[in-house]
Length: 101
Image (cartoon, rainbow, N blue to C red; front, side, top):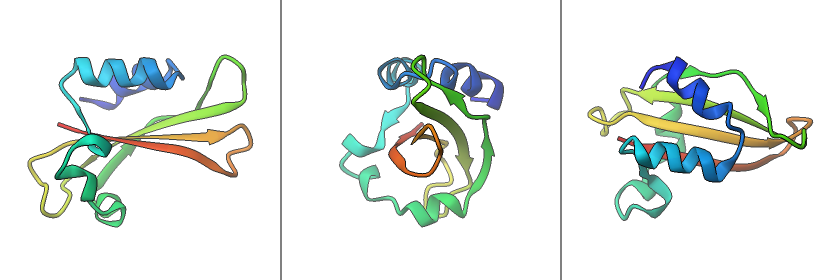
């Protein structure tokens, strides 16, 4: 995936719709995968990354931001998509979604 395609997905600013799009594209939800759910966040952030801008949900209460991470040590063959969902002041992370392909 390239950053422009991810940006279009993140602009949906809806967790359910984002998850549907990533699943449709063949990505695996790392939280539900028996091997990938143990990948260290620190290892992910040591990989090469590209990030989208932040986008508000339709209520203006949460922001969505995405990133593509590659070259993760031990998982070089995978591409990771990370979605950060934050409160409207970007002070408290509500949830982080991690997908892999």
